Amino acid sequence: MAQALASGFVQSGQVDAASVSFYDPAEASISAMQQAISGGTSTTSATDVIEQSDVVFLAVKPQVMPRVITDIKDAVTDSTLVVSIAAGITLSTLCDGLGSTRIIRVMPNTPCLVSTGACAYASGAGATDADRTTVDALLSAVGIAVDVPETYMDAVTGLSGSGPAYIYTVIEALSDGGVAVGLPRATATALAAQMVKGAAEMVLETGKHPGELKDQVTSPGGTTIAGLRELKEAGISGAFMSAVAAATKRSKELG
Image 1 (cartoon, rainbow, N blue to C red):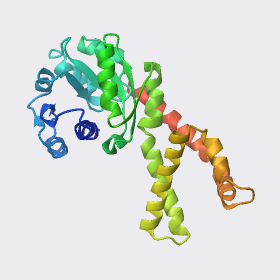
Image 2: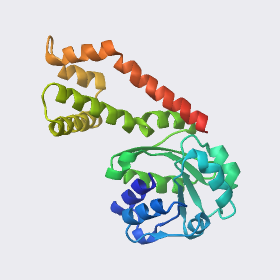
Image 3: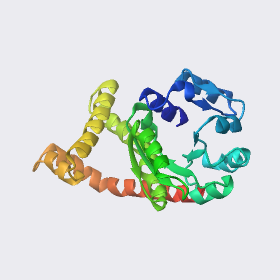
Image 4: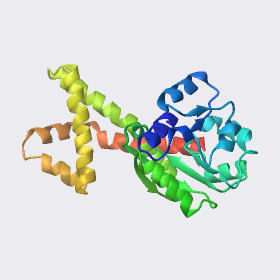
């Protein structure tokens, strides 16, 4: 996720690669970031990143955030804007641990890598309008950015944060279906993926309710209604709702 965001920021022109510094204890992660950000600088510690940066992204798993907070808390000052993308970790936990309230909590997703991310962010009490503008501009460079109350963040995690995995599963299943009725695998996957992309664009561009768009495809006694009946009998809608609820619950547990 760090690679996706940093690459997007640089490729969009929002950030100069030479101004990016990063640290990870794993050499493989450092190498991957160096490949993603040509001209960026790796440091020898997390505190080095803090001291060299005006805006710091904590792109770590929630399970290791307590250790990260311990490592960097003494380096964080009032001049540091801290942005966390760790699922479930609350603003209060971050503010208490770092001794700063100039913090913004973000939930991005991996399509940021191809500038089609869906991101939401919530602000700590000390974050300024300028801080929010900075984060909004960075996230908007890699997709869309939505400013939300923190109470929404676990739900955002369950929906758009985890959502790409749900859709990859859908594309895989549709491709399997195409193969089952005689299409070559490559053709089936390409058609399925492009169809999902196009359907999503229709929702965003037209502003119409998905149900209305669905009805426009569904003619009486036709092929689409036959397929929709199978989906309804299989409980697909309920399964997706349950997936979002389960991921939301897990986000709360991680916090």
